[in-house]
Amino acid sequence: MTLLKIARSPAPTVSADTSVQDSVAKMVEVGVGAVVIVDEEEEIKGIFTERDVMERMAAKCLPCDTTKVGEVMSSRVEVAHLDTNPSEALSIMDSHHFRHLPIVDDHGKVLGMLSVRHLLHRMVEDLSQELEALDSYVSADGPGG
Image 1 (cartoon, rainbow, N blue to C red):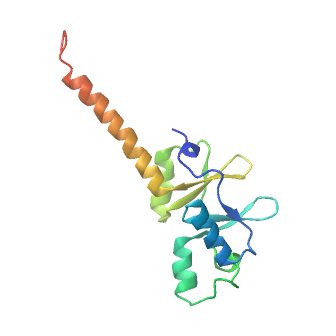
Image 2 (image 1 turned 90 degrees about the vertical axis):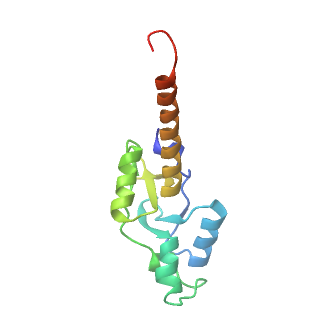
Protein backbone atom coordinates (compact mmCIF):
# COMPACT_ATOMS: atom_id res chain seq x y z
CA MET A 1 0.00 0.00 0.00
CA THR A 2 1.43 3.39 -0.98
CA LEU A 3 0.79 6.41 1.20
CA LEU A 4 -0.51 8.47 -1.71
CA LYS A 5 -3.45 6.08 -2.05
CA ILE A 6 -4.66 7.05 1.42
CA ALA A 7 -3.49 10.65 1.49
CA ARG A 8 -5.37 13.76 0.42
CA SER A 9 -3.92 14.49 -2.98
CA PRO A 10 -3.11 17.08 -4.06
CA ALA A 11 -2.14 18.43 -0.67
CA PRO A 12 -3.78 21.69 0.34
CA THR A 13 -1.16 24.44 0.19
CA VAL A 14 -1.09 28.17 0.88
CA SER A 15 1.59 30.85 0.91
CA ALA A 16 2.94 32.37 4.12
CA ASP A 17 1.15 35.65 3.44
CA THR A 18 -2.28 34.00 3.29
CA SER A 19 -4.54 35.04 6.17
CA VAL A 20 -5.36 32.51 8.85
CA GLN A 21 -9.03 32.96 7.95
CA ASP A 22 -8.41 31.98 4.31
CA SER A 23 -6.15 29.10 5.39
CA VAL A 24 -8.82 27.70 7.70
CA ALA A 25 -11.43 28.15 4.95
CA LYS A 26 -9.23 26.04 2.66
CA MET A 27 -8.87 23.37 5.34
CA VAL A 28 -12.66 23.24 5.71
CA GLU A 29 -13.23 23.23 1.95
CA VAL A 30 -10.83 20.34 1.38
CA GLY A 31 -11.86 18.50 4.53
CA VAL A 32 -8.42 18.20 6.12
CA GLY A 33 -7.01 19.52 9.39
CA ALA A 34 -3.82 21.07 8.01
CA VAL A 35 -2.37 23.03 5.12
CA VAL A 36 1.24 23.08 3.94
CA ILE A 37 2.86 26.49 3.66
CA VAL A 38 4.95 26.76 0.48
CA ASP A 39 6.93 29.49 -1.26
CA GLU A 40 6.87 30.47 -4.93
CA GLU A 41 9.08 27.50 -5.84
CA GLU A 42 6.69 25.12 -4.02
CA GLU A 43 9.32 24.53 -1.29
CA ILE A 44 7.85 23.71 2.13
CA LYS A 45 8.17 26.53 4.64
CA GLY A 46 5.85 25.21 7.32
CA ILE A 47 2.57 23.59 8.23
CA PHE A 48 -0.54 25.09 9.79
CA THR A 49 -2.82 22.73 11.68
CA GLU A 50 -5.96 22.70 13.79
CA ARG A 51 -3.68 22.61 16.82
CA ASP A 52 -2.04 25.85 15.67
CA VAL A 53 -5.49 27.45 15.45
CA MET A 54 -6.12 26.49 19.08
CA GLU A 55 -2.71 27.19 20.60
CA ARG A 56 -1.48 30.13 18.53
CA MET A 57 -4.66 31.88 17.49
CA ALA A 58 -7.59 31.26 19.82
CA ALA A 59 -5.54 31.08 23.03
CA LYS A 60 -3.95 34.45 22.20
CA CYS A 61 -7.13 35.99 20.77
CA LEU A 62 -5.38 36.94 17.52
CA PRO A 63 -7.59 38.20 14.68
CA CYS A 64 -7.83 35.52 12.01
CA ASP A 65 -8.63 37.95 9.20
CA THR A 66 -5.42 39.99 9.55
CA THR A 67 -2.95 37.47 10.97
CA LYS A 68 -0.83 35.86 8.27
CA VAL A 69 -0.46 32.10 8.46
CA GLY A 70 3.32 32.52 8.21
CA GLU A 71 3.27 34.26 11.60
CA VAL A 72 1.65 31.31 13.40
CA MET A 73 2.63 28.23 11.40
CA SER A 74 4.83 25.44 12.68
CA SER A 75 8.09 25.85 10.82
CA ARG A 76 9.49 22.42 11.74
CA VAL A 77 7.91 20.00 9.29
CA GLU A 78 8.50 16.27 9.13
CA VAL A 79 7.61 14.65 5.81
CA ALA A 80 7.06 11.22 4.34
CA HIS A 81 8.55 10.20 1.02
CA LEU A 82 7.01 8.08 -1.71
CA ASP A 83 8.92 5.04 -0.48
CA THR A 84 7.89 5.52 3.16
CA ASN A 85 5.72 2.61 4.22
CA PRO A 86 2.59 3.06 6.36
CA SER A 87 4.25 1.71 9.52
CA GLU A 88 7.12 4.16 9.16
CA ALA A 89 4.70 7.03 8.59
CA LEU A 90 2.72 6.06 11.69
CA SER A 91 5.94 5.89 13.70
CA ILE A 92 6.92 9.40 12.57
CA MET A 93 3.49 10.74 13.45
CA ASP A 94 3.40 8.98 16.82
CA SER A 95 6.90 9.96 17.94
CA HIS A 96 6.32 13.65 17.11
CA HIS A 97 2.65 13.75 18.15
CA PHE A 98 1.57 14.80 14.63
CA ARG A 99 -1.82 14.14 13.13
CA HIS A 100 -0.82 15.25 9.62
CA LEU A 101 2.20 14.42 7.52
CA PRO A 102 2.98 15.88 4.09
CA ILE A 103 4.13 13.43 1.44
CA VAL A 104 6.84 14.72 -0.88
CA ASP A 105 8.62 13.49 -4.00
CA ASP A 106 12.39 13.17 -4.40
CA HIS A 107 12.64 16.91 -5.11
CA GLY A 108 10.67 17.95 -2.03
CA LYS A 109 7.51 18.84 -3.95
CA VAL A 110 4.39 18.28 -1.87
CA LEU A 111 2.20 15.55 -3.35
CA GLY A 112 -0.28 14.77 -0.60
CA MET A 113 -1.32 15.18 3.02
CA LEU A 114 -1.59 12.07 5.16
CA SER A 115 -3.83 12.15 8.22
CA VAL A 116 -3.41 9.72 11.09
CA ARG A 117 -7.14 8.99 10.96
CA HIS A 118 -7.04 7.84 7.33
CA LEU A 119 -3.79 5.95 7.90
CA LEU A 120 -5.13 4.02 10.89
CA HIS A 121 -8.44 3.34 9.13
CA ARG A 122 -6.59 1.81 6.19
CA MET A 123 -4.28 -0.22 8.41
CA VAL A 124 -7.27 -1.63 10.32
CA GLU A 125 -8.96 -2.56 7.02
CA ASP A 126 -5.81 -4.38 5.89
CA LEU A 127 -5.48 -6.23 9.20
CA SER A 128 -9.16 -7.22 9.09
CA GLN A 129 -8.70 -8.72 5.63
CA GLU A 130 -5.65 -10.64 6.81
CA LEU A 131 -7.58 -11.93 9.81
CA GLU A 132 -10.47 -13.09 7.61
CA ALA A 133 -8.05 -14.88 5.29
CA LEU A 134 -6.34 -16.61 8.21
CA ASP A 135 -9.69 -17.55 9.73
CA SER A 136 -10.81 -19.06 6.42
CA TYR A 137 -7.55 -20.98 6.12
CA VAL A 138 -7.69 -22.36 9.67
CA SER A 139 -11.37 -23.25 9.54
CA ALA A 140 -11.24 -24.87 6.09
CA ASP A 141 -12.60 -28.36 6.36
CA GLY A 142 -11.08 -30.19 3.49
CA PRO A 143 -8.77 -33.09 2.67
CA GLY A 144 -5.74 -33.04 4.89
CA GLY A 145 -7.36 -30.40 7.15
